[in-house]
Image (cartoon, rainbow, N blue to C red; front, side):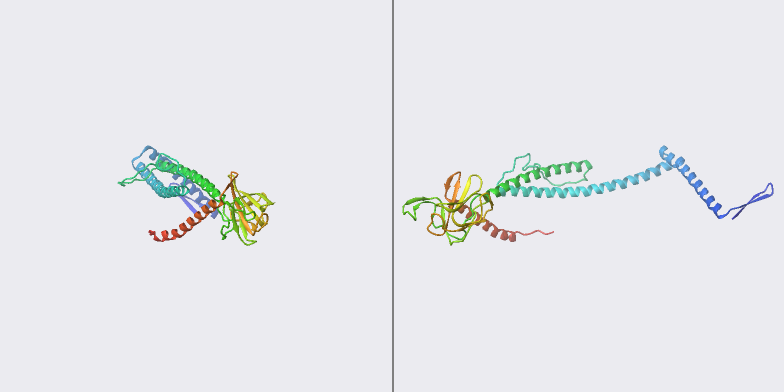
Length: 331
């Protein structure tokens, strides 16, 4: 590429020859100079005009800044509204949780502790007609979240207490000897005074006799620990189970025993087989209940177990009917 430079006064001309490399370098230099000039003009004119509030440039800057601020505010408001809706859903679920804990505590027979409201963590009764609503601010949303966090903590503590109480009740229930030791067999001889079948004289019968075929299963009346497993001259093969709270059950005249001293047994576990060992006239189980070292009539405990079983059966049969009769709202 050739560039001809002419001087009119001197009537002279000069020719410059640019190769490809020189042409590229010249273009780069020109572009760099143009960028520097543009940056200088921007700094001198636009920024200075924005700082000093020149009429046109200041208005343009304020318009750009205002638009950017509006967009940022709209974005923040949309996020706050979304968070407010989530908080509303959390509050609704918290109300459901409060109602559930009230029902559970009622079923467990555990009174709830008193608080400033009707229930722990619940604000006093409020209500009224919604006249107008407004968006929540960040501070209000934060306060609401803090309140929900405090209420959820209180409810978690309450449910922990309920769980502990229900577990205690469950353990107590399973540690009370209400399970029939020989299911399906009637009592042959009851607790109290009777004519002794061997001597023919009046004597105190210290338990219940369950006549059954030799080899019939003997079940633990409740969960506990085996404290005695031995052969007794009168009781024959005998097992004693400690159920805690100074409650002990005794199973006598067994033909075979499946547990040993120190074993943990659960309610309804097979611990022995019916036999006629010891002082006995025929195959049967002699069953005793001791409370704080005093003999008790086992029939009272077994009757309580039968009543609980019947109540559970009635509840199970009524629940499906009640559920079918309750209309389900759908949206």
